[in-house]
Length: 169
Image 1: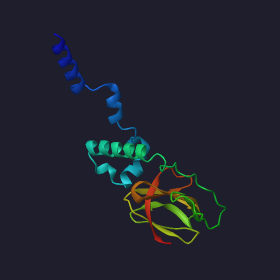
Image 2: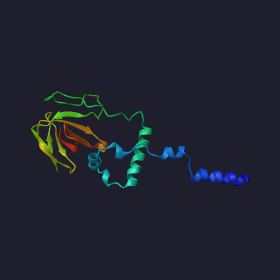
Image 3: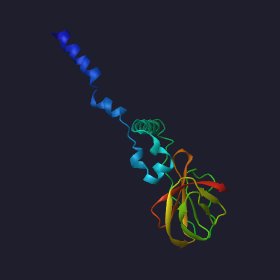
Image 4: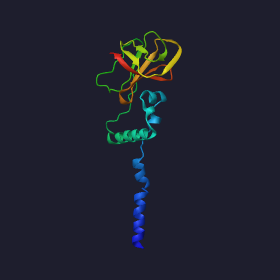
């Protein structure tokens, strides 16, 4: 009887892991909750299957656990005065936001819209999102680095973001 009990206990441990073991294999990170719909689409993650998204969540959670000292929270954007040339300070983290103003009227984006900033930089839309709205003169914009070397431009007063790439330094 003792051998039967031990065999049953061992079988249960193998086929029905304890809660602690399950907790270690469950990802702490959820990409769907961490990104806006626009960012999720812009990075192409909407083309992944549910299994691939879960695998990505697990990889990110594992990476965060193994690199806890190097995973830093995003830096808060530094505001600049209108017309000032915002730059990333020397020695600042690479994820520091670029804050500037668009030159001229802003009416939205669609296709491959180009964004000329008052600091001389020119950025171009890389996703296929469309936004139509009334004109805003020289609005403040913030460009932040996202996942997988993507950059996202947001316009003050506009809820959505657009994926962009720099075409002129």
